Image (cartoon, rainbow, N blue to C red; front, side, top):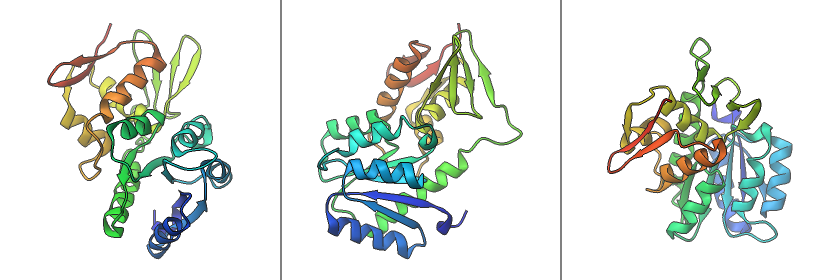
Length: 231
């Protein structure tokens, strides 16, 4: 896909940030849509169904974390990539962002080259992670079935929809049951070497998967990483 094929939604309450980032994205050929707060951003996301949404955290009416959580409830937006912007760099901001369903996180002030590189990496990683048409599309365990074609988990006649990164992480671990994956292996395969995320990212995603599936099939191997345990 060319840059012009991608729709990017930019949500920030600061007009100068919207104009600055919007200008740089448009210059690269992306289709850019803007909103000045989380509520407007949610409405615009439903309307244009962007491939990637860039959300500021601190905004009036509805902050970025709440907006992201609401977007993640919409089936049509399940594949949308979410990048958070914030002027803060506390750990709790990163944890809250990923807990809401974010894919990546970047702090202000933003250098255009770094920002555009991060956007390109996220979109490229998204394309590379698409399921292969001829590949295996379902994994069945003792407790549930993972359906890659629909990005959901089937458990006891229930359909559990997971955000893209949570699903990719689950699929990656479950594809090689009982194998222990290091944190570096998981970062490289699920997020990509050129995407920078916080140290707590995997932990947050694992916790959310466990909560949603109501199972502890993903085991923590202290000091090493994680494994998907068969039963």
